[in-house]
Length: 141
Image 1 (cartoon, helix red, strand yellow):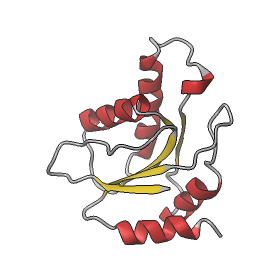
Image 2 (cartoon, rainbow, N blue to C red):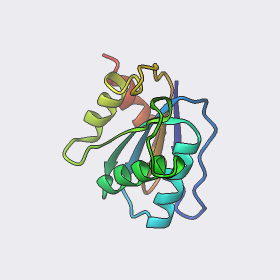
Image 3 (cartoon, rainbow, N blue to C red):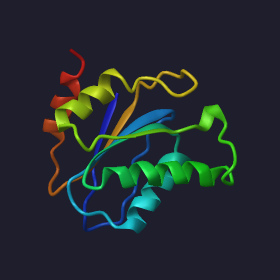
Image 4 (cartoon, rainbow, N blue to C red):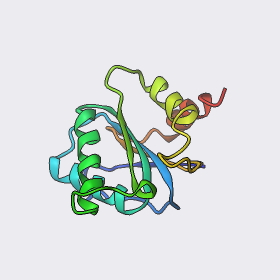
């Protein structure tokens, strides 16, 4: 199951509801404030995201932010395996490559739970759901 969510730059960021566990691909093609990045990171961790892939502008900052939100959730101590969030950033890959990776390789959690649900958060200039769905579905082949 794929849930696409365009993040409108004129409204506060809120995550759509998705059953956990799930993976999330964050596509960043416009500037996102540090505050918004931190809030989204905390929301992803709190809502059951177990694998976050970041692509685009400053994508490594998203990787770090979700890692820190995951640590904060457990008082900066050990994170139980059933709550560990795998994070990756894809600064040297194309959009089709990262969506292929998300579809074909980001398929389970650290403790081997299947990830059948995927949330795509799209921080771009305009919605582009048909294009993103087509690229994600192409990763099935």
